[in-house]
Image 1 (cartoon, rainbow, N blue to C red):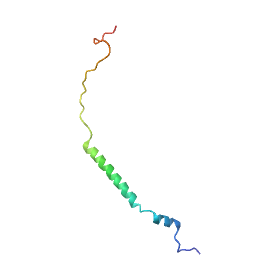
Image 2: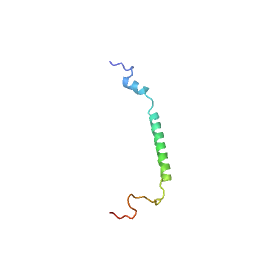
Image 3: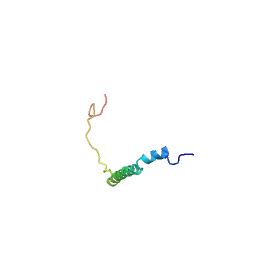
Image 4: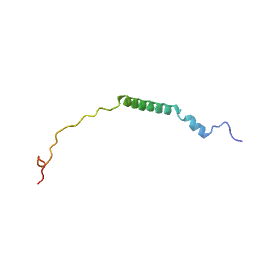
Length: 68
């Protein structure tokens, strides 16, 4: 007859592991931080109007552009 008073090894291992809530808590905190950063980025938008770039550029060679 099997000894029913002795716990199974798998149950002992599972009973010694920390509760999975701690992993879920860290995951929830990480997701909250990511959601917060995404919300800030969405509110800020990060867009600026385009500004024309007008600068004089020196080209090599004759200034008249005539080739010899």
